[in-house]
Image 1 (cartoon, one colour):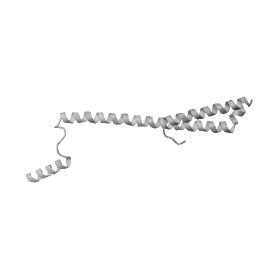
Image 2 (cartoon, helix red, strand yellow):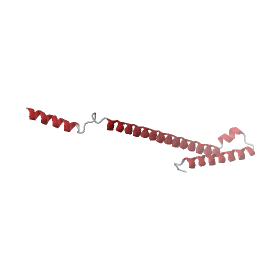
Image 3 (cartoon, helix red, strand yellow):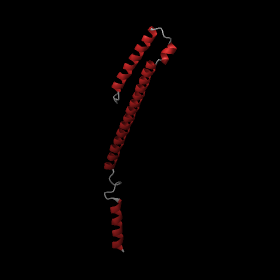
Image 4 (cartoon, one colour):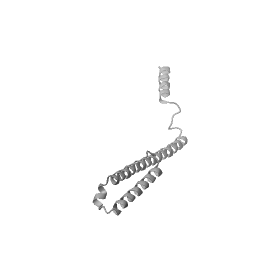
Length: 115
């Protein structure tokens, strides 16, 4: 039963709910009261399967939500990076062509030449 697909898990949940309904109707036809039906081992097992499936569906939904949130954040970062890139191209004086290390070397060389 191990599946990471949401559709498969929903199908499994429907299957177990159908089995539960069948088992409860069989027990009701036999004239067993609802308190004893709830304590029936087969009913307990089927309900446990339904809980497992619901738990897995919740994990899948949380995972999808997290993935969507990550995609949204990534898209926002890409958009802001493009916006910043556009600003840099418009104002080239603020961004030096040389690195800080190169600038430092040039200053040192200039001060050496003067002294």
